[in-house]
Image 1 (cartoon, rainbow, N blue to C red):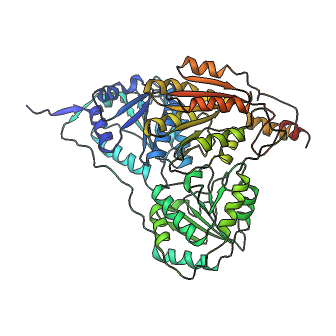
Image 2 (image 1 turned 30 degrees about the vertical axis):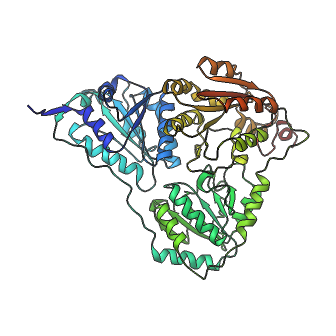
Length: 556
């Protein structure tokens, strides 16, 4: 006799398979045991067990960034969901597709402040593109398909679905089937708008492009690179979007954000036309909303973004195009318009960037020179290496001296969330086991989610962690020295022996206090597989890649 019903949790797992989900990240909870049971026999979906919900959410966010499809995480109610909220925030500000499923209290307990109860649609409303609760198991296919569609459409981002515990164990008609896999709809570039863009370019004398962000992918990257190189257009990348164009491109001008090349900032500030493609022009990319210059009478701003609501949201635009990044870039690469005179600014901007981004050894260099270490890694590792980092001044050396060639190759939170690098690198190692994966973390940054090394070991991931230890919350210490010189408060850290800690997790590890020791440790690490950690110890005097020092800030 044919089965007439099945469990709601089994239907949910079938819906995930239909949407192409092949991996979930989770910290298990009793509120969704039925889902874990449904996954038990589901060889198509790998379950990665994590040690903290923030780490699981970061992994899902990074997985979405790598694939363009929503990364998926499952966490339990209350503390689990609130821990995971940091990853939802990162996915939102980074415009990365993600779906977070939260086990919820039973429907009969709602509204009574049951055990670990939170109103999740209300809690996540300002953090996610959409947050909802599935009370009717028959509507699971509808909700899951909508969640994936919302996550990938327009400006990609996170969706949160709460799953009442009792709903997951309820029986539903066996005939209720998953909805078909959703895809991002085509958004062709308007021919009239493209003609208007080329007319503006033909009148420009010093244009510049800012690229990377929502909906960016390899196709967009390749076509836009061809377009920019054909007309000699300088291309800058938005904050932490440095893989949006290969660093080897002759028109690559560097990256905007914290600690940018001053010459690039001036180039953008003085440009008569700025073409923004994919970036949402956030605070970091725009130097606090000062570049592009608001209401500059001689500066034309063209903004291309997949979400019409982002166009004109902060900056007024002279020409706004709502289009998919790859569709726009392909149209630009194929457009033939003889009125556009090739620019020579691209090559000049590239020379300025190369001079700024080339490490110059100094006689007064510190014992462990991070610029030299990053340069060594860059010159020794494959061009398709994926580099992940969290937040902190340590990332300034990485962003300045690393040259991103492949795509995707950079995993870095634009919202400045600490603790992102290690979980993101683990997600990358699982998604791309054939590629070299490097996580760069600060000491304070690492201890936010360093426990996920245990998750990496359990999952068999292979990655290198470079841990930069200056015994301080470096970014805050730098700001503290600027505002209150010599009055150190709450920014000093008493750290463990990180090499010994890594060894306790089963990793190979080494400690380096000089550039030479780092080079020796790195030479051994790159020949090994599995989890490797280099504990790079630097003095707190080195505050930033820009050359800022404690003594310099105190004596300014």
